[in-house]
Image (tube, rainbow, N blue to C red; front, side, top):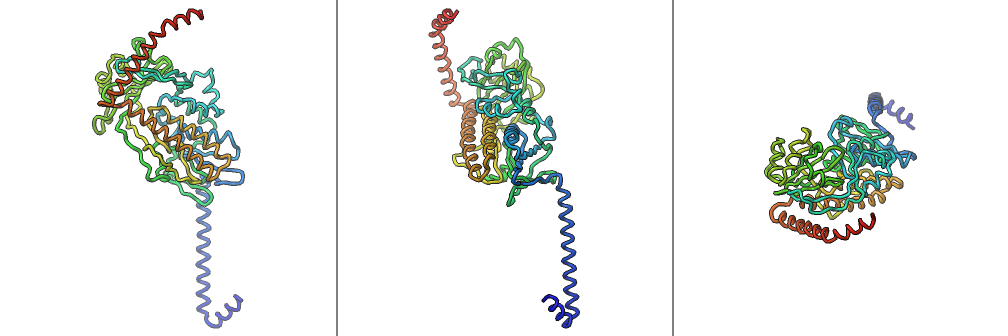
Length: 446
């Protein structure tokens, strides 16, 4: 039929045939160009392109190489050989950025970490990588104990050592700054600042409190600046800091000073790690903060010379100063329940540090999300996000309440200090009343 039509066209008009041949030639040129472009694109992306998902492989893209993301990667890697985990971290290398000092791991976090095989040596009873805390101790500005809170099974671990252990055998691509993602019909594609991209089955935002993944997934999400300045450092332990030495024996100590100033002291090996924080007195107060100004704060807002000596002898390396931020205390789950993108840890529920819940909540998120991959679906992912939301925002509220309590000023501080003083006197009275009984029990046991 085609030849008949062409024959008719030929006899009707030679010019029409030439016109058709020109069109065919143009189409051929376009197709050849497209084929060449596709080949070049494929060649350029060869190093960064992985199969999104096959019958046997699920490719998980983890954005962020912090503790929560690494814990998730370890759980996924050891639980299934059909999961390929790729981690993308903005730092140039493992050592390019200060990771902080110590981190307190509570029973919730320890329950997860004990399931990660590469941490067996770090968490063993023979390890010297951690110290066990027996209590959280609240102390007034005169370095007088108000009361203790039982710490349960809480371990204080050096953050760098924990992160180094979690990096074992993982595929981390360093110096990869995530920019955005694009959801595809059968997966998701992540784009990076260096112009590269990569495809996977699912993308997990583990990129911290300033999460870029969250900014795209939840564009209306907001963090609140609490106008609280925080700065930390270390001081070598010394014999003339006797009150601090006695207070910090197997305990994390929180000292409540005047006008919203508070000092946290943690004993670790042969040093004290401390963090001083306060309600900002003026805009940008944290800028150009000198050691002399910190010493002045120790003199003005705490009523014991040992606090002054602690700050005076601190190392020249400081963590901070920086402002504290928190997520709003949400009552409704904001997560979009998308099959291809979800969040974990501070990326989902950024909180202050004053309840010790940040990393522990992230570890719990990691375990729950790893379990989802046993049967990954929109329903199981929704269940994870609902559970993560309830746990995470309970921790956000607890942390915020703690931050507000320890930085209270005015009549709020007066009420707080009055209540703590009553508790202190009652505790002293009970101790005196029960002293004969304790003496008798010790004599009987002997």
